Length: 307
Image (cartoon, rainbow, N blue to C red):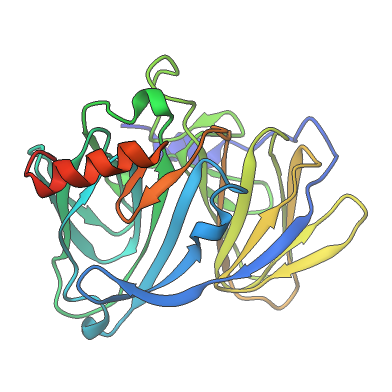
């Protein structure tokens, strides 16, 4: 388990490049429902999959009304990609056909590799109160789509944290931030490099943070509390309000974020990954490279051979 106390006190080093990324496009999350009727905001949709390769989808669920989440996500299949679930508040129980089980609680992360296929459920273990979190779908390269299913569970204390001199808290779920490795990491020989996945907490009042972001990574910023401004290389400031995603251009090597005076605490996700540059063939919960592979996945599921 990482030592959060030491990591939280380590001041981030300055980025090596001052060339900054700008906002290519602002995307507003779309209200929808999934599972057995869970209300959520879909942020990264099918239309953005090629541009934000290797990411396939990002959902944000947040409600204090049990009717919005109590039915949960009963048994359903997956093949060919990974799901990363990050819980901000609440409790969700995971069970799958590969024998994995875990309770995801506030501040924790669940990283599931569907690989060759499994059937799983994600059900609330609460009948009232706030349930809030995110699910990100991360594509697998063709060579790994039929790998054995896997599952990792990280409780909140296992997520490394660092604090900048300006008082910005960074939770490092995956990847590396200012020399600190995230909770999830794996050998490059088995999978592509883990994506960058950061939960950034800006304190109330005027604050800035600059973070390295190599040009070869596709990246986006999603604000889920307040408003953050992205400062581009020419000094232009683009506001990214709550429930908006900023699709970042690939022209710079760092991202500068700014919170204006008078703001309450702001929170945002910074997510980036190296594109696979492979065909994407999707049919619901199956993501493969070809139509033939999709037909096989559907047939395996209908024949009871998935998971």
